Amino acid sequence: MSASTWSIQPDDHVRLVKAAFEAKEFAYCRYSNFRVGAALLTTTGEIIKGANIENASYGGTICAERTAFVKAVSEGVRSFTALAVVTDVASAISPCGMCRQVIREFCAENMPILLVPADYEKRLAEGIPNGGVKETSIGELLPDSFGPEDLERPRGQ
Image 1: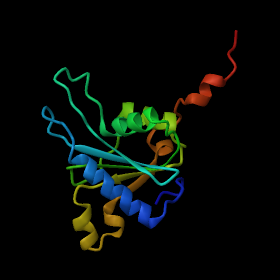
Image 2: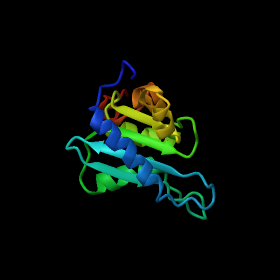
Image 3: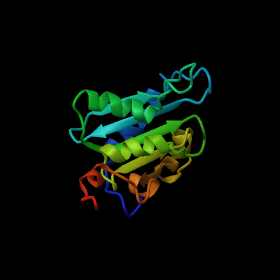
Image 4: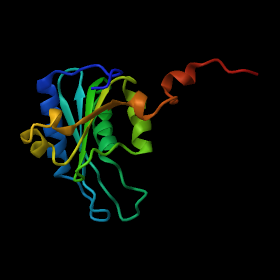
């Protein structure tokens, strides 16, 4: 775990990773064939899942992370404890730049983001600590970021 993130309970960690894998199953990625699943843990313990949804116009595509946030925020949920992201790639893959900015909008800079390798279960069985999950935060992924609080700063003349 990174020293700059807060901790989540081990059972929440497991639930969140499992939910990200479940979400990935519903990815609509007929153009890239790159499935992504994301799962957000709310401060009330609820998990909200998202998958990437592609579009023939490409610009209409929405990433799994943003799908989860749009679902949550559109239902009034704006307080989160952790995020997990998984793909079909063996190494942990990080959110794109646009997703990082959306994460920054709604999450504390030190909230844990779990980047989960596709072979997580195999790694666990092999005794690899934490299944090879890379734990980071939006503060690490998007340093010196612009956030909602910056809009409140005084402006010079």
